[in-house]
Amino acid sequence: MIAFPGAPDERAPHVLTLAILGFLYDQPLHGYELKSRITGLTGHVRPVSDGALYPAITRLEKAGLLRRRTEPGTGAAPRQTLELTDEGRAELQRRLADPEQAEITDQIRFFALAAFLHHLADPVRQSAVLRRRLAFLDEPSSFFYDGDGEPVRAETEPNPFRRGMLLVARASTAAERAWLAETIAALEPAALEPAQLEPAELEPTVRRRPE
Image (tube, rainbow, N blue to C red; front, side, top):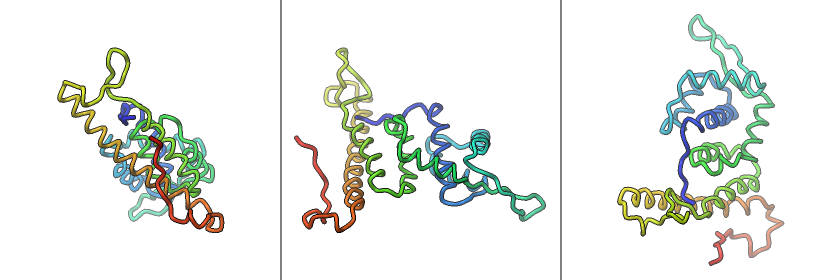
């Protein structure tokens, strides 16, 4: 499957919510610190505006997932620190362990998810999420389809611009598949205690798909 990003306007609220929960899971942050970190993660796709960030914070606060704590400021005005509640921490764990299908199939949403997957402490569950993405990438697909509904391959595409899109996407997908396979192979042995491993299994290997 060639990964093709979805429409930014549709995915932005989902990515923003995940980023707020993910960054606050690490530590409490002031609003401007949170905005800076989110911009570093998603700014290449869509700039984070105050008009999007602060209403999202308010929604999460009303849902009981985060709270504001007032601290003395360096000037006259006090500063507000944002921190997750226990419910907010549990919500991030739920989202990481059982992502929506769109968070697997949409490249930008998946990468946002992967940025916080280290918060999911269980290697087996981390691997399960990566395996879902790998299975999606293994499905035959394309940007373009012929009249019979079959995926168009770069080698048969006469339009040089469309051919370029297919070639670049193929290279990107190949690199992602290699990373997924390598990471899954590293995670799955880590899920077992050393005593559970047979001697021949102590060296992790990358499983190849049957021809």
